[in-house]
Image 1 (cartoon, rainbow, N blue to C red):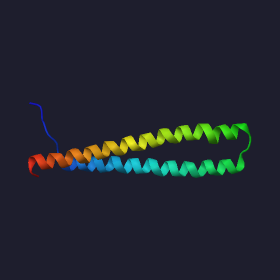
Image 2 (image 1 turned 90 degrees about the vertical axis):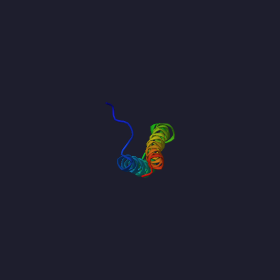
Image 3 (image 1 turned 60 degrees about the vertical axis):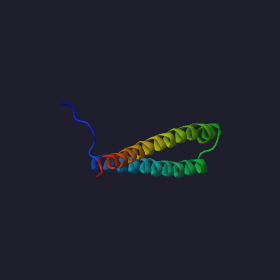
Length: 90
């Protein structure tokens, strides 16, 4: 027979782990911003402009989207664990 429901404690822990991973992505974005800032101080010309104005902003946006999606996934797990506890009275 198939098992239904959840172990709310485990799901809650996984939700926190997902949110922590989203924070790690935020830390990586900040580190890359710092590195790109150093590049801009030491690299001039059209390729530097393309890198700083086109390439990095596009990828930063994608990383921010990943951060938000993973954080949302973690929040969803936390919400579901809370709802399970409310339904089951635990």
